[in-house]
Amino acid sequence: MTNIQDVAKAAGVSVATVSRVLNDQSSVAPATREKVQKVIQDLGYERNLLGRNLRRSETKMILVLLQNLSNPFYSKVVQGMEDVGHQNGYNVMVCNTDLDEQREKLYLDLLKSKLVDGVIFTAPTLSGAALSEVAKHYPIVQCSEYKEKAQASRVSIDNVEAGYCATRHLIELGHTKIGMISGKNRLPSAIDREKGYKKALKEAGITFRSEWIQNESYGFQGGFRGTKRLLKSEVKPTAIFAISDIMAIGSMKALKEEDISIPREMAVIGFDNTGISGMYDPALTTIAQPRYELGATAMDLLLQKIRGEEKKIQHKILKHELIIRDSTTRKKLLE
Image (cartoon, rainbow, N blue to C red; front, top):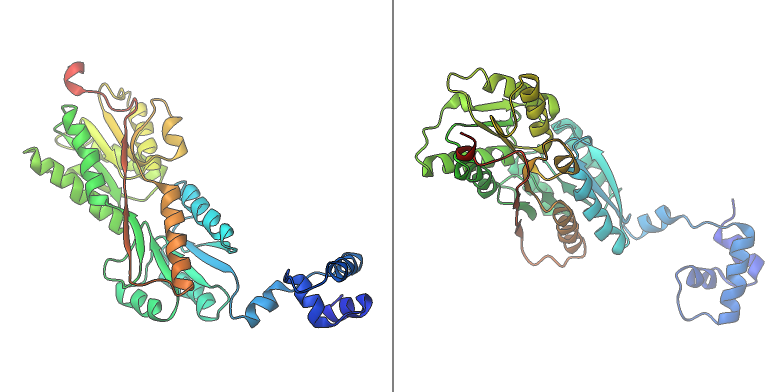
């Protein structure tokens, strides 16, 4: 395998000169630069970037930890991270934790061993105290999901307000019996969206019934099962708020199986505004998260930390948006 010494010998220059050419330094004469570049091409020399970066105590690699690689919510989030990372000379490695704390700790060993320069958590399982301890010594950022007590920068939306917005939309359409399909693993976002849901009900003078919240696994089947149980409630809802689009699609599948018309007999609203939300029939009303901006902001915060530019811990809150489509219609007009 050709090394830098072979290139220097073939070009008749010093190793230092070859290094300056490789690093695109201006102190090399044009003729010498051209000669060295030709030898590099002729010999097929390839730089050992990993070795170089390790000598500099950097890898130019960022680790992104997702709770579930199959969740369509993360596609735009990761794209935002990658774009900002690449613009700044960093590559992104994505790994799945499946909300397993031991797996998360194993991935953190990559950071502690200096095999990556920083980590973005999208759904940390470590405690706030444990994350704070990691953040004292290594660059980390929380994105979307976060531990409130962790002393680390984060970016998210206001999930309480977003849950309130979704529920308020259904109330304004005339619905007073509103079911909710939430997550059984009790992620902070789910808990906060429930708080917003209950806040909207209370504000409207609607008595909350515990049977109206069904905690299920994230995904299509979770939405399907949760809806089947809601339909068996003593007081059956006329509208359903699901905390993700894919759960809402599962909900609509269950409603269609029962020949329940959407939105005439049951309105449905989802969350995230993933690509599938506008493709389903009927098109799904949803709460849009700025997914790309979440990822881009998280990467920007992390790079500030890596470069030593972080002046203080930052908590960034981005705006959500209600996207009204065909799955919700004014109830009073249908009665």
